[in-house]
Figure 1 (spheres, rainbow, N blue to C red):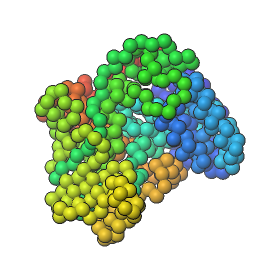
Figure 2 (cartoon, helix red, strand yellow):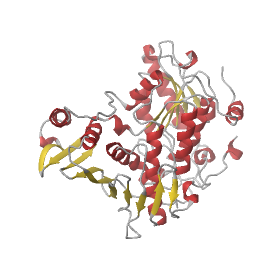
Figure 3 (spheres, rainbow, N blue to C red):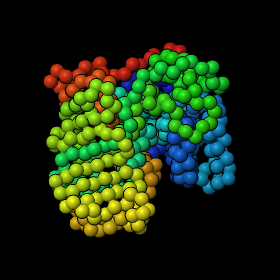
Length: 441
């Protein structure tokens, strides 16, 4: 039975209810697969759809763009028509995410909208009893991160943040090397990714046919349409909204990947920086430093990847690459095929040689980030990148952005989630939010 969108909104405004920590029969297919609703059908959703379809049952797709919505509707139903053992071809398409969440036969949703929409959909979903896979960054500002961590916990839902590097072997091995002291006492970390977001100054273009532009903007400020934000039709690139502060946020695009791994390696998943120092050059887009309670400094630089500097060695890691140096000598390196062997061979060597008797073993995912989520939905255990991990990572991410936006040194209390010693401004914790519901409901 489906509730109407208005019935759902009325119910979600009441005190959040808590479901039992077991899956209801209505939330699974006849063959035991999870029934998932996909919300936000852009480029990232394409890979997520491909990942979920064979092992879960996608029964809803939702997007404010007609072309993309219908494209994915046809794609999903065609898949299940060709592979009926994976589920029935019964997917439905929706413009409004509330209609997906209102369905009692859906137990989980996957959120791959632009960043500024993440939080509201997560909150509504978990309050209605849904488990959530949400793309990174988990939230669009610090206040949202605090609220998401609180509400997910209160409602006992399973949430996986899409920081999938936690499920990649090279990053787990790197974090274990640091946590087990293989490179000695950790002194400094360098995280490399692009710079802070910019304010949107795009000129108006003719409206895209079949797009609910007001709904696309949602809680973001009203502004004229531009195709760089929501490209016409089905596209294969990542749109430019990622770099604009109102929708994405520059640093917030890659920091939830690399800064997340830095937290993992430093054992800071439940903490955060205590001091945030902007670069001396007020025009610089790189150079912000985060100081952590353990005395480690994390510096933001241009490029891509992570570097760990210890008293006894150096470690570099990125997707598909690793370089471990001890005592000034390279002991394991795979940066390209020219280094010989394969990445897995080098990782196996590292694990056998330096982690065989390790005291610290981190969460190990042997398949994929989405598989880990589905497994945890069934077992009711926390996944590798649950809400507290995603929340603390994104708070550090937003603090880094604030250093660039306001060019002020800040002190932060990671336990109370607030600025300390008279620094910062409480207004910076919350972004500008438009009351879009008056216009769309």
